Structure formats: structure tokens, C-alpha cells
Length: 295
Image (cartoon, rainbow, N blue to C red; front, side, top):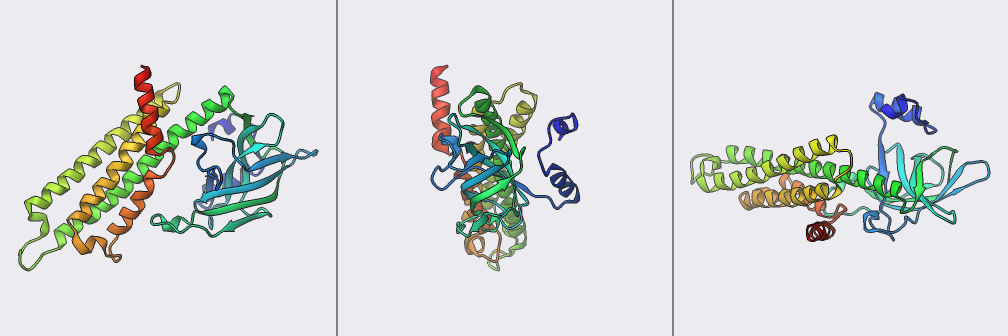
């Protein structure tokens, strides 16, 4: 926002986005993954193509996967490549109501069901001149540096999101252990030492998560360059700790934890999705190993 206030070029429709955000009705999301390409962090150019017309307008054609919030998003920040001899890569701002956009109801996941992360298709979607934001030659230092900054914050925000899921599961577990009084025990489950120990293990995992996230965010805010690898490792450790914490919660709640009437099973299913957010653990650990060996 500050860049715009200081005089940076405003894209067409920016006023509408800003006003909607202030009113609490503006929803913006980024589209990067594609059915054929998969995640862009593993390399390759996006298959969604932006073609510039003689009058400066753009035509967008292609497909995007996992369009989270597809029923409610107002604007899509869509990763594209140009059809120029030397392709440029960057983002175009696409109003969700644009003619030529269609939603393919493909989302049928184990977790995060309410996100409605369907596939979007762009068929000759026309955008005004200036809808493009920072289209840079693919593989150029500027493009690579921009990608690194985006990836750093995406990893940290993903870690924080899934840590929140684990904490919601932990909160339900504490309430359950205090309120559940088996007749053969005659007192709440929260008084059982073995269960107290499991809760303590969950607390230790959440402490690790919070410490890693807080430290990484402070470093990122104060650094002159992004530390992509640190953010990736934080994402890897946190999302795996989240799954482990909720597995522990399920291990001491029996049928109650797996009952759909209670939220713990949903939190666990949602947590499993953290592992598939790019970059996945295999890429992260390979990157970390290479960096350590090179040092």
C-alpha cells in the first residue's frame, strides 16, 4: 500500500480493490499452480499465457489449479507468461467477474473442504492496459529475487496458518479432557497423569512452532535479502509438528476424536494438507542438504 501512496503506478481497478478492502468486502487471492505444471517452485514456465494486443490490452488464456475461495474472491492475482519471443513472467490482476472465466468444480479433498479450491479456466479474458504487474524476463536476476521474496513469506504464512489449526485442536482437547468424566474414574480425564504427559508433549511441539515462526518473521522483517531456505525449513518443521500434535490428540480421545460431531477429526484432516503446500519436504530437505554440504 505504501508504494502506491508514494506514487507508484496504480493498476486499473486498484481503487475498487482498495475501497472494497476498507469496506471489508474485498477478497484477493493469488493463482499460481496449474494442472499440467504443478507447483511453480519446482521450475518451469506457467502455461497460462498473456497476449498483448495492438491497443495495449491483454488477453489471458489458460488454466489454474487450487483457486482457493473461488466462490467469493473478487480479484485474482494470476501468474502468467507472455507469448513474446523472450517470455516474461509475472502477475496480472483479473477481476473474478470478467467474461471468459469459468470455475470447474474439481475440489474433493480430504481436508480444507470449505476452501472450495476449484480449477479456474481463462478463455480469452480481456484485461485493460496496465493490468500487468512487474512482468520480468523469465530467469532474470530480478525475477528470481522477486520469486525468492514471495516464497519466503508464503512459507512463513503457511507455517503460521497450520500452527493455528494445531492450536485449535489443542484447545478442543483441553476442553474435552476437563469435561469428560468416565463413571469408572469418577473425575475428569484431565486428572490422569498419562494423559497429562501427552498434553505436555503437544505443548512442547507448539512451543517449538511458535519460537521458530516468531524468530523467522523477525529475521525476515529486518533482513535486506530474503532467507528462502530458513523459511522453507520452518515450514517443514512446523507443518510436521502440527500433524504430530493432532495425532497425539487423537490417540487419547478415542472415538470422540474421530467423531464428525467434534472438530478434532477435521483439524487433523486439514493439517495433513500442510505437507502438500509447495515447497514440499523432499525439495526443502534436498535444498538444506546441498546448502550444508556446500558450506
